[in-house]
Length: 114
Length: 116
Image (cartoon, rainbow over all chains, first blue to last red; front, side, top):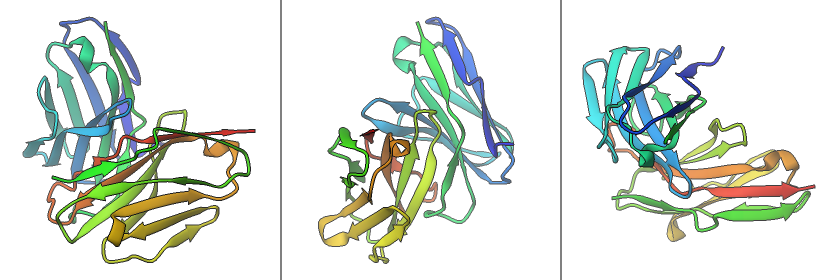
């Protein structure tokens, strides 16, 4: 079984709808991240969490919110989806210990907002 | 702020050719970590290598090799005798030691197409 899972894997939604992307991990890591990938821009950080009570904004947090329901679960919400949020979204985890630790990525969620 | 640049957006080679993917980074910090990830057509991100800023030794892993040069702020990736299975998007990324969040800054990626 995959260590980092994301649901759904694909989603098409309409402008203005609320949508939640979910991430679960079995690696026992404290740190979790949400990134979005756009062509030519690489991955950009949306939010990150050190633990259940510690959530931080990343580079592009506007229009998104997150919830860390448990150490193993980190959800990303789009309160009112817009077409330019069409992208590939990745969840990642990392062990505690500072920079230099590898991040483990989920399989990605392809979101299309029409 | 740090920045990672992958100037080659797409590279096309014929199988068995050698190919080098360039990565140039910018940071004022002296302690940092560099990474390469592979994203095959299936979409997942696969970790390839991590290098810290104090270790400038080149590394070889099978057909893959990495050349880290602090003098030119580059961390280039070479695939020797490329194969069709190497076709993917490759990302270079950077994180700083003082970055408590361990946040990665990614380059824009290089799409490698290996033709049979």
